[in-house]
Image (tube, rainbow over all chains, first blue to last red; front, side, top):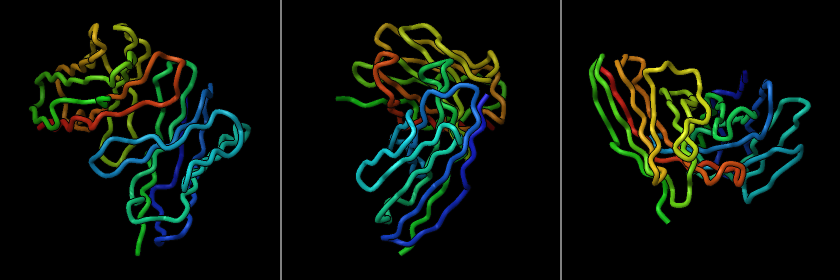
Length: 111
Length: 114
């Protein structure tokens, strides 16, 4: 099975940087995903890591260490619209479409 | 390009009833996954359909069942509804398994069981 842990909530000010950590335990690893979800809306894809290292996409970056079972999502130059829940999800080998999600980290951006 | 759509948007049922939720996958996508998301939690995988066959299932009882049609749209059926079935039900589609890493989620159906 898989166990995914991420902080419940983080608060940061506009323009700042926030790092959301995710640790996981899995019997088989085939990729880690980060999704953003605004209240009442569907999750939207942010990033995907399957090899160790940093993936950068604009203001968002995601890092993976498979040996440590650890990932983080880095949000730079925070904007008010970044206030949302950020979901870490891991895929195993049993089913291509099966993602195991963490409970999500609620990021609150303050002026 | 049309994205993933779901219907209905909201639904209220009582315990013991049955419900059918519908999902139209994004154009060109033949894989559909269903998730249940309780308030304050991450989505939980229910099952996946690939070319009209169930292709993976999470820890949900048999009263959760599904179908995928030749046009790759899908249904989620839940029998004998329980109060704990109240949640947001999300459908996600992706192209042919193995060709991409991204799942595109629909807006969800909010189910309330009274």
